[in-house]
Every structure is written in C-alpha cells, then in structure tokens.
Length: 228
Length: 190
Image (cartoon, rainbow over all chains, first blue to last red; front, side, top):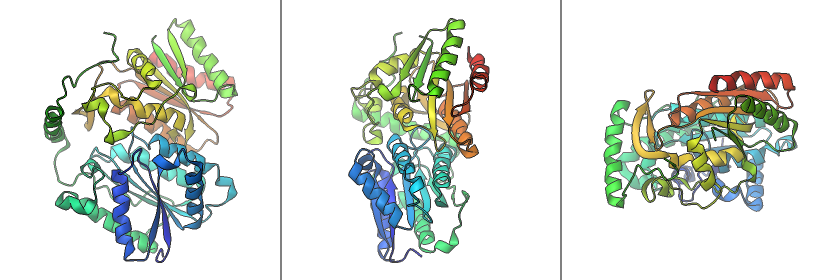
C-alpha cells in the first residue's frame, strides 16, 4: 500500500541523535528497498519553530501514514511532543487529516509494559480525537541499550529490537494486515531474555555503581534542595 | 508550606477562578499553609533527558538548568501534598504542566529498586508529597478520563508515593459539582 509513497514520522525525543531517531533510521533503511520514503521530523526542533511545524502539518496531510516514535517520559509523552500534538489539534477542524492513518512506536528504559501503557493510550486517544485511523502501537522496553547508536552496529544485543522493527516495517508495507480502531498491535516484548524482574535491581545497580566510580561521583545520594 | 499547587489552567477563566476559590477556602478553613504557582508564568526549560543526566551523575540531585525550577524543587520536596491543576490533552497533563513534571528527574537517584512489583528508581528524598491531580476536560471524552486517572496513578507509583487521587471536571462545570468533586478528594488528604 505504501509502496512508492511517503510516511511522515515525528520523533518524540527531547534531544537530537536519540534512540527514537536511531529506530526511525533503521526503519528508513528497511523501507529504502521498498521505495518508501520517510519524511522525519524531530519534535525537539518542531515545537518551537513555526516553519518546521508548518512543514510537519503539510506532510501529515499529504502522506497516508503518520508515525509517532517516542520514548516514555515520566510515564507519558515528553513535553515537546504533547505541545506539538496540541498544536496539531488546532488543525482538526480544517479536515486536513481526513482518511489519514496513525501508528505509534513507544519505547522505554524500564522493561515492563506497564511503564509504557499510558504513553500508548495517549497516542491512541490523540488518533481517535483527531479522526486518524489508528493502526496500532508497537512497544518495547530496555531501549536504553540503543543510546542513539545505529541499530545495525549494536550486534546481537539489539537483535530482538531489530526483529520487532522488521516486523513493523513488513506490516506497514502490507497495510491490509492491520486494522483500525483498537490497540491490538502491541507486541508486548518487554524483556529480551527471561530474567525475573526482581533480579533487575541487582544487575542494573552493578552497572550504576561502575558508572558512579567512572564518573567520580562523590555523593550520589545528595539532597541539595532539602532544608534538613 | 504544606500544600504546593502547580496550576496550568489559564488565569481569568471560570474554571480557574472557581477551583482557586474552592481550594483556598478549604485549605484556609483547615489552616493549611499553601503556595499557588501558575506554571504558565514560570520560565521552565525542557528537560534534555538521557543525553544530560547531570542531575544523576555530575551534580547529584541538582539540575544544571538555571531557570524557575530551581525555586520549585525545594518547595516540592517540603510539601505534604502536591496538587496538579491542568487542562487535559488527549488524557495527558497539558504541555504547560508536563514541562514541569518532566523536570522531576533530579528527585530520583539512579539506583534501581522494586516497588509494587515493578522496577523503579529510588527516591532521592525520603518523604515525597502525596499527589492530587485535577483535570479539566472539554468534551467528557471517557478515554481521556481513563488515561488521566491512570497517568496520575503511574506518576504516584513512579515517585513511590503511597497516597494519590485524581478527579476530572467538565469544563465550565457548575460550582456545586466542582466543589463536591474536589472537596471529597481533598478531605482524604487533609
């Protein structure tokens, strides 16, 4: 369906060279052999630029599919992304998004799906309110291992993420495999290896301790805003 | 100061005026000290996120951004109750409030723990305030109400807060409805 067409992607990170951007770059690579081009926008550049925002809206209205690729930020979507979605809402009554489709790719550092649920539901609700045909959400945790690096360079550590994105790319190409209206595409692949969640603090805190040592942090427990 | 109110509602609107009256009357009756912050009037920069994390590993607990958040942090950790007042955007807090909430990262330490069976960061400060969020919604969208309540709950769990509540009020609600909803919940905290 999207062959020889273009997809608009809004990268929801607050920073450049982000993990979300690396995910979108990987998808673009996958699409290049299918004659699908991505018009990507970084929300950190769009939300305070009238020109970039106008470009974004033009592309959303021209392209069939709008993809939100965003990290979870304090349980929801980041401030610049919410701000941009609010601005997009002002175009609702101009009918420029009629018959457009929307999907979301939501990722978080925390492995469990519960950390991503509110963010996914906000994307779904945005689609419903704006009249987009919601094609679903794909989500995964432990995305902090990407750290904005190209996914292909990360080898086996991110193979499971690449597999998820390969599936996403395939589904986007074969549009007839997904349907609208409900959150039903969530893959729920939160943890790449079957480690009980109760073991995570021990494993992760080992890395934190090493980083504290490497960075020469003196008082990690400091309470600078306390008046105790 | 026992109650910190972070308000993202537009001033000089019916909702703002009514909610302010109801909250202040109740807090004054109960002799609670409070501070009202209109976040739209604060200069708050965007959190830079994982590319920064200075507040975790460079200057633990201190955000390196010099803006009005520096005056909010001490109030936040001293308060017994934190109140969010916000229009609801697709179920989320409005961006003007979200901008402030995104800057709560220095309140964590980068050490992991299990809380309510989930992986979380530990709190930097021992006693986090209870959380009460009040959302204003234009069209009664049930999905927005559900998400707003969930987001408040998730924020509370994320900040390891034990006591929290949320209410959603229809835009331009009448004073009696508004008062009933807010006072009922507020009494649970005061």
